[in-house]
Amino acid sequence: MLKNYRLIKWLGLFLFSLPWMHATADEINWEVNGFVTQGFALSDDNNFYGDSESGSFDFRELGLSTSARLSERLLVSGQLVSRKAGKVDDGDLSVDYALVDYRFLEQQWGNAGVQLGRIKNPFGFYNSTRDVAFTRPSIMLPQSIYFDRARNLELSSDGFVLYGTKMFSSGRIKSELFAGAPRKDANVEYAYLNADWPGSFEDSEGYLWRNEYSSNDYSFIAAITYGNFKLDFEHPGTPAPGAPGDGVLDLDIAAISLQYNWDRWSLTGEYFRQNIDWGDIGGIFSIKPQTSSESFYVQLEHRLTSDISMFVRRDIFYMDKDDKDGTKGQLLDGQPPYTHYAFDWTVGVGWEATPNWLLRAELHKVEGTAWLATQDNPVGVEKEKNWNMFLLQATYRF
Amino acid sequence: MIRLLLFLLLLTFSRIGLSEVIVNSSVSLEHVSRQYLLSIFSMQTRVWPDGQSVRVYILPPHQSEHQAFVKTELKVFPYRLVKIWDRAVFSGAGQSPMVVGSYQEMLDKVSSHKGAIGYMSTGMEVGSDAKKLQVD
Image (cartoon, rainbow over all chains, first blue to last red; front, top):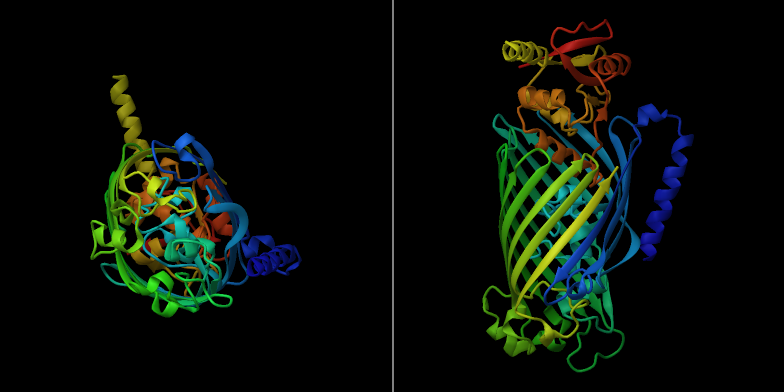
Protein backbone atom coordinates (compact mmCIF):
# COMPACT_ATOMS: atom_id res chain seq x y z
CA MET A 1 0.00 0.00 0.00
CA LEU A 2 2.87 2.34 0.87
CA LYS A 3 4.49 1.68 -2.49
CA ASN A 4 1.17 2.34 -4.14
CA TYR A 5 0.88 5.62 -2.33
CA ARG A 6 4.35 6.72 -3.41
CA LEU A 7 3.65 5.82 -7.00
CA ILE A 8 0.36 7.71 -6.99
CA LYS A 9 2.16 10.73 -5.53
CA TRP A 10 4.82 10.62 -8.25
CA LEU A 11 2.26 10.12 -10.96
CA GLY A 12 0.21 13.02 -9.63
CA LEU A 13 3.25 15.30 -9.40
CA PHE A 14 4.20 14.39 -12.91
CA LEU A 15 0.75 15.01 -14.36
CA PHE A 16 0.41 18.36 -12.62
CA SER A 17 3.82 19.42 -13.86
CA LEU A 18 2.88 18.74 -17.48
CA PRO A 19 1.35 22.15 -18.22
CA TRP A 20 4.55 23.87 -17.02
CA MET A 21 6.81 21.97 -19.34
CA HIS A 22 8.33 23.81 -22.25
CA ALA A 23 6.92 21.57 -24.93
CA THR A 24 3.47 22.56 -26.13
CA ALA A 25 0.54 20.21 -25.59
CA ASP A 26 0.59 19.54 -29.30
CA GLU A 27 4.18 18.34 -29.22
CA ILE A 28 3.96 16.10 -26.17
CA ASN A 29 0.81 14.45 -27.42
CA TRP A 30 -0.78 14.11 -24.02
CA GLU A 31 -3.72 11.73 -24.04
CA VAL A 32 -6.14 10.41 -21.46
CA ASN A 33 -8.20 7.24 -21.77
CA GLY A 34 -10.53 5.52 -19.38
CA PHE A 35 -13.17 2.88 -18.85
CA VAL A 36 -15.98 1.93 -16.48
CA THR A 37 -17.27 -1.63 -16.28
CA GLN A 38 -20.20 -2.95 -14.25
CA GLY A 39 -20.97 -6.64 -14.05
CA PHE A 40 -23.71 -8.90 -12.79
CA ALA A 41 -23.24 -12.54 -11.77
CA LEU A 42 -25.89 -15.17 -11.03
CA SER A 43 -25.00 -18.76 -10.18
CA ASP A 44 -27.07 -21.76 -9.08
CA ASP A 45 -24.30 -22.90 -6.72
CA ASN A 46 -20.94 -21.50 -5.56
CA ASN A 47 -19.99 -17.84 -5.49
CA PHE A 48 -18.07 -15.83 -8.06
CA TYR A 49 -17.64 -12.05 -8.08
CA GLY A 50 -19.49 -11.79 -4.77
CA ASP A 51 -22.61 -13.54 -3.51
CA SER A 52 -23.62 -14.68 -6.99
CA GLU A 53 -25.97 -17.36 -5.64
CA SER A 54 -28.38 -14.54 -4.82
CA GLY A 55 -27.32 -12.45 -7.84
CA SER A 56 -24.38 -10.10 -7.38
CA PHE A 57 -23.56 -6.65 -8.74
CA ASP A 58 -20.30 -6.84 -6.83
CA PHE A 59 -18.12 -6.55 -9.91
CA ARG A 60 -16.86 -3.16 -11.03
CA GLU A 61 -13.76 -1.99 -12.88
CA LEU A 62 -12.71 1.65 -13.24
CA GLY A 63 -9.58 2.71 -15.04
CA LEU A 64 -7.97 5.99 -15.97
CA SER A 65 -4.83 5.98 -18.07
CA THR A 66 -2.68 8.75 -19.38
CA SER A 67 0.43 9.05 -21.51
CA ALA A 68 2.63 11.79 -22.87
CA ARG A 69 5.49 11.85 -25.29
CA LEU A 70 8.15 13.96 -23.63
CA SER A 71 10.54 13.69 -26.54
CA GLU A 72 10.75 11.80 -29.83
CA ARG A 73 11.94 8.67 -28.09
CA LEU A 74 10.53 9.02 -24.58
CA LEU A 75 7.00 8.06 -23.56
CA VAL A 76 5.66 8.22 -20.01
CA SER A 77 2.40 6.53 -19.10
CA GLY A 78 0.37 5.47 -16.11
CA GLN A 79 -2.94 3.88 -15.22
CA LEU A 80 -4.98 3.92 -12.04
CA VAL A 81 -7.41 1.05 -11.57
CA SER A 82 -10.09 0.37 -9.02
CA ARG A 83 -11.52 -3.12 -9.09
CA LYS A 84 -14.30 -4.50 -6.97
CA ALA A 85 -14.80 -8.25 -7.27
CA GLY A 86 -16.61 -9.95 -4.40
CA LYS A 87 -14.30 -10.43 -1.44
CA VAL A 88 -11.24 -10.81 -3.68
CA ASP A 89 -10.86 -7.17 -4.69
CA ASP A 90 -12.10 -4.35 -2.48
CA GLY A 91 -12.23 -1.55 -5.04
CA ASP A 92 -9.23 0.33 -3.62
CA LEU A 93 -7.46 2.52 -6.11
CA SER A 94 -4.11 1.09 -7.18
CA VAL A 95 -1.42 1.98 -9.65
CA ASP A 96 -1.78 -0.59 -12.40
CA TYR A 97 1.26 0.68 -14.25
CA ALA A 98 3.42 3.82 -14.18
CA LEU A 99 6.40 3.74 -16.45
CA VAL A 100 8.85 5.50 -18.70
CA ASP A 101 9.48 3.91 -22.07
CA TYR A 102 12.64 4.87 -23.94
CA ARG A 103 13.01 3.78 -27.56
CA PHE A 104 16.76 3.65 -28.17
CA LEU A 105 16.64 1.90 -31.54
CA GLU A 106 14.24 2.64 -34.36
CA GLN A 107 14.77 1.38 -37.89
CA GLN A 108 12.58 0.25 -40.75
CA TRP A 109 13.52 -3.36 -39.97
CA GLY A 110 12.62 -3.14 -36.29
CA ASN A 111 12.97 -1.33 -33.00
CA ALA A 112 14.13 -1.77 -29.42
CA GLY A 113 13.54 0.01 -26.14
CA VAL A 114 13.43 -0.20 -22.39
CA GLN A 115 10.60 0.36 -19.90
CA LEU A 116 11.18 1.25 -16.28
CA GLY A 117 8.71 1.51 -13.42
CA ARG A 118 5.58 -0.48 -12.61
CA ILE A 119 4.99 -2.58 -15.70
CA LYS A 120 2.25 -4.96 -16.81
CA ASN A 121 3.62 -8.50 -16.77
CA PRO A 122 4.12 -9.59 -20.38
CA PHE A 123 2.35 -12.92 -20.23
CA GLY A 124 0.17 -14.88 -22.67
CA PHE A 125 -2.24 -13.06 -24.97
CA TYR A 126 -4.35 -11.06 -22.54
CA ASN A 127 -2.47 -10.37 -19.31
CA SER A 128 -1.16 -6.90 -20.13
CA THR A 129 -4.68 -5.49 -20.59
CA ARG A 130 -6.77 -8.04 -18.67
CA ASP A 131 -8.83 -5.46 -16.74
CA VAL A 132 -9.87 -3.54 -19.83
CA ALA A 133 -13.12 -5.10 -21.02
CA PHE A 134 -12.64 -3.89 -24.60
CA THR A 135 -9.45 -5.91 -24.93
CA ARG A 136 -10.89 -9.16 -23.53
CA PRO A 137 -12.72 -11.70 -25.67
CA SER A 138 -15.20 -12.35 -22.84
CA ILE A 139 -16.43 -11.06 -19.47
CA MET A 140 -14.25 -13.52 -17.60
CA LEU A 141 -10.89 -14.49 -19.01
CA PRO A 142 -10.20 -18.24 -18.94
CA GLN A 143 -9.72 -18.79 -15.22
CA SER A 144 -7.37 -21.73 -15.65
CA ILE A 145 -4.67 -19.31 -16.84
CA TYR A 146 -5.76 -15.77 -15.96
CA PHE A 147 -6.92 -16.68 -12.48
CA ASP A 148 -8.63 -13.76 -10.80
CA ARG A 149 -8.04 -15.09 -7.32
CA ALA A 150 -4.28 -14.38 -7.37
CA ARG A 151 -4.41 -11.64 -9.92
CA ASN A 152 -2.04 -9.15 -8.34
CA LEU A 153 0.85 -11.55 -8.76
CA GLU A 154 0.09 -11.97 -12.45
CA LEU A 155 -0.89 -8.35 -13.00
CA SER A 156 2.10 -6.03 -12.86
CA SER A 157 5.53 -5.73 -11.29
CA ASP A 158 8.04 -3.09 -10.29
CA GLY A 159 11.11 -3.45 -12.47
CA PHE A 160 12.18 -3.09 -16.07
CA VAL A 161 11.48 -4.57 -19.48
CA LEU A 162 13.83 -4.74 -22.43
CA TYR A 163 11.89 -5.15 -25.65
CA GLY A 164 12.61 -5.41 -29.32
CA THR A 165 10.86 -6.15 -32.60
CA LYS A 166 12.55 -7.51 -35.70
CA MET A 167 10.69 -7.65 -38.99
CA PHE A 168 11.12 -10.48 -41.47
CA SER A 169 9.69 -10.94 -44.93
CA SER A 170 6.89 -13.15 -43.57
CA GLY A 171 6.13 -11.26 -40.35
CA ARG A 172 7.75 -10.04 -37.17
CA ILE A 173 9.11 -11.30 -33.87
CA LYS A 174 8.67 -9.31 -30.71
CA SER A 175 10.69 -10.22 -27.65
CA GLU A 176 10.22 -8.85 -24.13
CA LEU A 177 12.40 -9.62 -21.16
CA PHE A 178 11.11 -8.48 -17.78
CA ALA A 179 12.88 -8.53 -14.42
CA GLY A 180 11.66 -7.12 -11.14
CA ALA A 181 9.42 -7.59 -8.14
CA PRO A 182 5.89 -8.92 -8.80
CA ARG A 183 3.08 -7.53 -6.64
CA LYS A 184 1.89 -9.71 -3.79
CA ASP A 185 -0.97 -9.49 -1.31
CA ALA A 186 -3.23 -11.61 0.89
CA ASN A 187 -4.94 -13.00 -2.24
CA VAL A 188 -1.64 -14.51 -3.31
CA GLU A 189 -1.58 -16.27 0.07
CA TYR A 190 -5.08 -17.61 -0.54
CA ALA A 191 -4.07 -18.87 -3.95
CA TYR A 192 -0.76 -20.49 -3.07
CA LEU A 193 -1.11 -21.19 0.67
CA ASN A 194 -4.92 -21.81 0.68
CA ALA A 195 -5.56 -19.30 3.49
CA ASP A 196 -4.49 -15.95 4.92
CA TRP A 197 -1.96 -17.25 7.45
CA PRO A 198 -0.15 -15.31 10.15
CA GLY A 199 2.79 -13.70 8.38
CA SER A 200 2.97 -12.56 4.78
CA PHE A 201 4.95 -12.55 1.56
CA GLU A 202 7.51 -9.84 2.29
CA ASP A 203 9.71 -9.90 -0.79
CA SER A 204 9.32 -11.02 -4.34
CA GLU A 205 11.49 -11.23 -7.40
CA GLY A 206 11.07 -12.72 -10.79
CA TYR A 207 11.59 -12.60 -14.51
CA LEU A 208 9.45 -13.24 -17.56
CA TRP A 209 10.55 -13.75 -21.13
CA ARG A 210 7.91 -13.47 -23.82
CA ASN A 211 8.45 -14.02 -27.53
CA GLU A 212 5.74 -13.45 -30.08
CA TYR A 213 5.72 -14.19 -33.77
CA SER A 214 2.99 -12.66 -35.91
CA SER A 215 2.53 -13.04 -39.64
CA ASN A 216 2.49 -9.87 -41.78
CA ASP A 217 -1.28 -9.46 -41.57
CA TYR A 218 -1.56 -10.77 -37.97
CA SER A 219 -3.66 -13.70 -39.21
CA PHE A 220 -1.36 -16.05 -37.29
CA ILE A 221 0.09 -15.18 -33.89
CA ALA A 222 2.16 -17.48 -31.69
CA ALA A 223 3.71 -16.59 -28.34
CA ILE A 224 5.82 -18.35 -25.76
CA THR A 225 6.19 -17.02 -22.22
CA TYR A 226 8.65 -18.44 -19.74
CA GLY A 227 9.43 -17.19 -16.29
CA ASN A 228 10.14 -17.66 -12.61
CA PHE A 229 8.80 -15.92 -9.51
CA LYS A 230 10.23 -16.21 -6.01
CA LEU A 231 8.08 -15.12 -3.07
CA ASP A 232 9.65 -14.79 0.35
CA PHE A 233 7.22 -15.73 3.14
CA GLU A 234 7.96 -14.48 6.61
CA HIS A 235 6.26 -15.64 9.76
CA PRO A 236 6.51 -13.63 12.98
CA GLY A 237 7.86 -15.91 15.74
CA THR A 238 7.28 -19.66 15.76
CA PRO A 239 4.47 -20.89 13.50
CA ALA A 240 1.64 -22.95 15.01
CA PRO A 241 1.58 -26.67 14.02
CA GLY A 242 0.68 -26.93 10.31
CA ALA A 243 1.15 -23.22 9.63
CA PRO A 244 3.79 -22.12 7.13
CA GLY A 245 7.04 -20.66 8.46
CA ASP A 246 9.80 -18.61 6.89
CA GLY A 247 10.70 -19.77 3.42
CA VAL A 248 10.68 -19.09 -0.28
CA LEU A 249 7.86 -20.12 -2.61
CA ASP A 250 9.25 -20.78 -6.06
CA LEU A 251 7.04 -20.63 -9.16
CA ASP A 252 8.17 -21.73 -12.60
CA ILE A 253 5.75 -20.78 -15.32
CA ALA A 254 5.53 -21.48 -19.04
CA ALA A 255 2.80 -20.60 -21.51
CA ILE A 256 2.24 -21.26 -25.19
CA SER A 257 -0.31 -19.09 -27.00
CA LEU A 258 -1.65 -19.60 -30.53
CA GLN A 259 -4.18 -17.66 -32.54
CA TYR A 260 -5.55 -17.79 -36.09
CA ASN A 261 -7.55 -14.80 -37.32
CA TRP A 262 -9.83 -14.65 -40.30
CA ASP A 263 -12.22 -11.88 -41.33
CA ARG A 264 -15.10 -13.27 -39.28
CA TRP A 265 -13.51 -16.01 -37.21
CA SER A 266 -10.75 -16.26 -34.62
CA LEU A 267 -9.44 -19.49 -33.13
CA THR A 268 -7.40 -19.07 -29.95
CA GLY A 269 -5.70 -21.56 -27.67
CA GLU A 270 -3.31 -21.25 -24.77
CA TYR A 271 -1.48 -23.83 -22.68
CA PHE A 272 -0.01 -23.02 -19.28
CA ARG A 273 2.20 -24.98 -16.88
CA GLN A 274 3.07 -23.86 -13.39
CA ASN A 275 5.55 -25.68 -11.16
CA ILE A 276 5.05 -24.68 -7.54
CA ASP A 277 7.77 -25.44 -5.01
CA TRP A 278 6.96 -24.59 -1.40
CA GLY A 279 10.59 -25.37 -0.44
CA ASP A 280 11.26 -24.92 3.25
CA ILE A 281 8.04 -23.02 4.01
CA GLY A 282 7.03 -26.17 5.89
CA GLY A 283 3.79 -26.60 7.83
CA ILE A 284 1.19 -28.62 5.92
CA PHE A 285 3.14 -27.88 2.72
CA SER A 286 6.01 -30.14 3.80
CA ILE A 287 3.77 -33.17 3.09
CA LYS A 288 3.97 -32.48 -0.65
CA PRO A 289 6.40 -29.64 -1.27
CA GLN A 290 6.09 -29.66 -5.08
CA THR A 291 3.16 -29.56 -7.51
CA SER A 292 2.77 -28.95 -11.22
CA SER A 293 -0.52 -27.50 -12.39
CA GLU A 294 -1.76 -27.67 -15.97
CA SER A 295 -4.16 -25.30 -17.72
CA PHE A 296 -5.41 -24.90 -21.25
CA TYR A 297 -8.31 -23.55 -23.24
CA VAL A 298 -9.54 -23.43 -26.82
CA GLN A 299 -11.83 -20.66 -27.96
CA LEU A 300 -13.68 -19.98 -31.20
CA GLU A 301 -14.99 -16.47 -31.85
CA HIS A 302 -17.33 -15.47 -34.62
CA ARG A 303 -17.98 -11.89 -35.68
CA LEU A 304 -21.52 -11.82 -37.06
CA THR A 305 -21.26 -8.14 -37.95
CA SER A 306 -18.68 -5.51 -37.08
CA ASP A 307 -20.60 -4.89 -33.80
CA ILE A 308 -21.80 -8.34 -32.74
CA SER A 309 -19.62 -11.29 -31.88
CA MET A 310 -20.12 -14.67 -30.25
CA PHE A 311 -17.74 -17.21 -28.81
CA VAL A 312 -17.57 -20.71 -27.40
CA ARG A 313 -14.75 -21.85 -25.14
CA ARG A 314 -13.58 -24.96 -23.31
CA ASP A 315 -11.29 -24.25 -20.37
CA ILE A 316 -9.51 -26.99 -18.40
CA PHE A 317 -7.57 -26.70 -15.15
CA TYR A 318 -5.79 -29.41 -13.14
CA MET A 319 -4.31 -28.18 -9.89
CA ASP A 320 -1.97 -31.18 -9.95
CA LYS A 321 -1.29 -32.61 -13.39
CA ASP A 322 -0.31 -35.95 -11.82
CA ASP A 323 -3.60 -36.16 -9.93
CA LYS A 324 -6.20 -35.17 -12.52
CA ASP A 325 -9.22 -36.60 -10.70
CA GLY A 326 -8.19 -35.00 -7.39
CA THR A 327 -8.24 -38.25 -5.34
CA LYS A 328 -4.66 -37.86 -4.07
CA GLY A 329 -5.36 -34.22 -3.33
CA GLN A 330 -8.30 -35.25 -1.20
CA LEU A 331 -6.03 -37.47 0.92
CA LEU A 332 -3.69 -34.52 1.44
CA ASP A 333 -6.06 -31.64 2.20
CA GLY A 334 -9.32 -33.41 3.06
CA GLN A 335 -11.23 -31.44 0.42
CA PRO A 336 -13.49 -33.24 -2.10
CA PRO A 337 -11.72 -34.40 -5.31
CA TYR A 338 -13.62 -31.90 -7.51
CA THR A 339 -12.00 -28.97 -5.67
CA HIS A 340 -8.73 -29.90 -7.42
CA TYR A 341 -9.84 -29.38 -11.00
CA ALA A 342 -12.27 -27.29 -13.07
CA PHE A 343 -13.75 -27.86 -16.54
CA ASP A 344 -15.62 -24.89 -17.91
CA TRP A 345 -17.83 -24.68 -21.02
CA THR A 346 -18.56 -21.06 -21.88
CA VAL A 347 -20.74 -19.47 -24.55
CA GLY A 348 -21.05 -15.72 -24.85
CA VAL A 349 -22.19 -12.83 -26.97
CA GLY A 350 -20.92 -9.26 -27.20
CA TRP A 351 -22.43 -6.15 -28.74
CA GLU A 352 -20.46 -2.98 -29.41
CA ALA A 353 -23.53 -0.76 -29.37
CA THR A 354 -21.44 2.34 -30.17
CA PRO A 355 -17.66 2.79 -30.38
CA ASN A 356 -17.84 3.67 -26.65
CA TRP A 357 -20.28 1.08 -25.34
CA LEU A 358 -19.78 -2.66 -25.06
CA LEU A 359 -22.40 -5.05 -23.68
CA ARG A 360 -21.73 -8.72 -23.01
CA ALA A 361 -23.55 -11.78 -21.72
CA GLU A 362 -22.18 -15.25 -21.10
CA LEU A 363 -23.09 -18.64 -19.69
CA HIS A 364 -20.75 -20.98 -17.86
CA LYS A 365 -21.33 -24.67 -17.25
CA VAL A 366 -18.63 -25.79 -14.86
CA GLU A 367 -17.55 -29.10 -13.32
CA GLY A 368 -15.14 -28.64 -10.44
CA THR A 369 -14.27 -25.68 -8.25
CA ALA A 370 -10.46 -25.40 -8.40
CA TRP A 371 -10.31 -21.74 -9.47
CA LEU A 372 -13.09 -20.50 -7.20
CA ALA A 373 -11.90 -17.92 -4.69
CA THR A 374 -11.76 -19.16 -1.09
CA GLN A 375 -12.62 -15.61 -0.01
CA ASP A 376 -16.06 -15.89 -1.64
CA ASN A 377 -16.48 -19.59 -0.77
CA PRO A 378 -14.99 -19.94 2.70
CA VAL A 379 -16.41 -23.38 3.52
CA GLY A 380 -14.72 -25.96 1.29
CA VAL A 381 -17.22 -28.80 1.64
CA GLU A 382 -20.09 -26.47 0.71
CA LYS A 383 -18.70 -26.06 -2.79
CA GLU A 384 -20.83 -27.91 -5.34
CA LYS A 385 -19.21 -30.05 -8.02
CA ASN A 386 -21.49 -29.11 -10.93
CA TRP A 387 -22.60 -25.52 -11.20
CA ASN A 388 -23.76 -22.93 -13.70
CA MET A 389 -23.28 -19.22 -13.92
CA PHE A 390 -24.75 -16.38 -15.94
CA LEU A 391 -22.81 -13.13 -16.35
CA LEU A 392 -23.74 -9.71 -17.71
CA GLN A 393 -21.42 -6.78 -18.27
CA ALA A 394 -21.67 -3.21 -19.52
CA THR A 395 -18.58 -1.14 -20.33
CA TYR A 396 -18.14 2.48 -21.26
CA ARG A 397 -14.81 3.76 -22.55
CA PHE A 398 -13.53 7.19 -23.42
CA MET B 1 -32.78 1.81 -64.60
CA ILE B 2 -32.49 3.41 -61.18
CA ARG B 3 -30.66 0.30 -59.99
CA LEU B 4 -28.21 0.58 -62.86
CA LEU B 5 -27.61 4.25 -62.07
CA LEU B 6 -27.09 3.42 -58.41
CA PHE B 7 -24.67 0.68 -59.40
CA LEU B 8 -22.70 3.08 -61.62
CA LEU B 9 -22.74 5.64 -58.85
CA LEU B 10 -21.39 3.05 -56.41
CA LEU B 11 -18.67 2.09 -58.87
CA THR B 12 -17.63 5.73 -59.15
CA PHE B 13 -17.60 6.10 -55.39
CA SER B 14 -15.56 2.96 -54.94
CA ARG B 15 -12.98 4.43 -57.36
CA ILE B 16 -12.91 7.57 -55.24
CA GLY B 17 -12.67 5.29 -52.19
CA LEU B 18 -9.13 4.25 -53.15
CA SER B 19 -6.60 5.94 -50.95
CA GLU B 20 -2.97 7.00 -50.93
CA VAL B 21 -0.51 7.54 -48.10
CA ILE B 22 0.57 11.12 -47.50
CA VAL B 23 3.31 12.47 -45.23
CA ASN B 24 4.51 15.88 -44.20
CA SER B 25 7.25 17.06 -46.57
CA SER B 26 9.72 17.04 -43.65
CA VAL B 27 9.75 13.21 -43.82
CA SER B 28 12.84 12.23 -45.82
CA LEU B 29 11.51 8.85 -47.03
CA GLU B 30 10.04 8.61 -50.54
CA HIS B 31 8.83 5.02 -50.36
CA VAL B 32 8.26 2.44 -47.60
CA SER B 33 7.54 -1.26 -47.36
CA ARG B 34 4.00 -2.32 -46.56
CA GLN B 35 5.26 -3.94 -43.38
CA TYR B 36 6.86 -0.72 -42.17
CA LEU B 37 3.69 1.18 -43.08
CA LEU B 38 1.65 -1.21 -40.92
CA SER B 39 4.16 -0.79 -38.11
CA ILE B 40 3.61 2.98 -38.32
CA PHE B 41 -0.20 2.87 -38.48
CA SER B 42 -0.36 0.27 -35.71
CA MET B 43 1.54 2.80 -33.55
CA GLN B 44 4.53 0.50 -33.04
CA THR B 45 6.96 2.91 -34.70
CA ARG B 46 7.61 6.07 -32.71
CA VAL B 47 10.41 7.77 -34.64
CA TRP B 48 11.21 8.22 -38.35
CA PRO B 49 14.66 7.02 -39.48
CA ASP B 50 15.72 10.71 -39.56
CA GLY B 51 14.88 11.07 -35.86
CA GLN B 52 11.67 13.11 -35.86
CA SER B 53 8.48 11.96 -34.13
CA VAL B 54 5.90 10.01 -36.08
CA ARG B 55 2.40 11.53 -35.87
CA VAL B 56 -0.34 9.28 -37.20
CA TYR B 57 -3.68 10.65 -38.41
CA ILE B 58 -6.67 8.49 -39.30
CA LEU B 59 -10.35 8.92 -40.12
CA PRO B 60 -12.78 7.57 -37.47
CA PRO B 61 -12.01 3.82 -37.19
CA HIS B 62 -15.64 2.83 -37.79
CA GLN B 63 -15.87 4.83 -41.01
CA SER B 64 -15.79 2.83 -44.26
CA GLU B 65 -13.01 4.99 -45.80
CA HIS B 66 -10.73 4.08 -42.90
CA GLN B 67 -11.64 0.40 -43.08
CA ALA B 68 -11.02 0.35 -46.83
CA PHE B 69 -7.59 1.94 -46.34
CA VAL B 70 -6.67 -0.59 -43.67
CA LYS B 71 -7.78 -3.53 -45.81
CA THR B 72 -6.28 -2.45 -49.14
CA GLU B 73 -3.13 -0.58 -48.11
CA LEU B 74 -2.16 -2.13 -44.77
CA LYS B 75 -3.59 -5.56 -45.73
CA VAL B 76 -4.84 -6.33 -42.24
CA PHE B 77 -8.35 -6.76 -40.82
CA PRO B 78 -9.49 -3.46 -39.27
CA TYR B 79 -10.51 -5.18 -36.01
CA ARG B 80 -6.92 -6.45 -35.57
CA LEU B 81 -5.56 -2.92 -35.83
CA VAL B 82 -7.96 -1.69 -33.12
CA LYS B 83 -6.81 -4.53 -30.85
CA ILE B 84 -3.14 -3.61 -31.38
CA TRP B 85 -3.85 0.04 -30.50
CA ASP B 86 -5.89 -0.85 -27.40
CA ARG B 87 -3.26 -3.24 -26.17
CA ALA B 88 -0.53 -0.62 -26.48
CA VAL B 89 -2.62 2.20 -24.97
CA PHE B 90 -3.90 0.27 -21.94
CA SER B 91 -0.55 -1.32 -21.09
CA GLY B 92 1.31 1.99 -21.30
CA ALA B 93 3.43 0.93 -24.26
CA GLY B 94 2.01 3.34 -26.82
CA GLN B 95 -0.53 5.95 -27.82
CA SER B 96 -3.56 6.02 -30.08
CA PRO B 97 -3.57 7.61 -33.52
CA MET B 98 -5.13 11.04 -33.87
CA VAL B 99 -8.60 10.97 -35.39
CA VAL B 100 -9.71 13.62 -37.90
CA GLY B 101 -13.17 14.17 -39.36
CA SER B 102 -12.46 14.41 -43.08
CA TYR B 103 -9.84 14.01 -45.80
CA GLN B 104 -9.51 17.80 -45.98
CA GLU B 105 -8.74 17.99 -42.25
CA MET B 106 -6.32 15.10 -42.70
CA LEU B 107 -4.46 17.00 -45.42
CA ASP B 108 -4.39 20.16 -43.29
CA LYS B 109 -2.99 18.31 -40.26
CA VAL B 110 -0.42 16.34 -42.23
CA SER B 111 0.68 19.51 -44.04
CA SER B 112 1.06 21.54 -40.87
CA HIS B 113 2.74 18.99 -38.53
CA LYS B 114 6.31 17.78 -38.93
CA GLY B 115 6.61 13.99 -39.07
CA ALA B 116 2.89 13.57 -39.75
CA ILE B 117 1.45 10.71 -41.78
CA GLY B 118 -2.08 10.05 -43.00
CA TYR B 119 -3.98 9.02 -46.08
CA MET B 120 -6.46 10.50 -48.51
CA SER B 121 -8.43 9.53 -51.54
CA THR B 122 -6.60 9.08 -54.81
CA GLY B 123 -6.56 12.11 -57.05
CA MET B 124 -6.73 14.75 -54.30
CA GLU B 125 -4.09 17.45 -54.75
CA VAL B 126 -1.48 17.84 -52.03
CA GLY B 127 0.23 21.21 -51.56
CA SER B 128 3.95 21.78 -51.12
CA ASP B 129 3.85 20.96 -47.37
CA ALA B 130 2.85 17.34 -47.91
CA LYS B 131 3.79 14.60 -50.32
CA LYS B 132 2.61 11.19 -51.38
CA LEU B 133 4.51 8.22 -50.01
CA GLN B 134 5.01 5.24 -52.33
CA VAL B 135 4.28 1.84 -50.87
CA ASP B 136 6.47 -0.96 -52.26
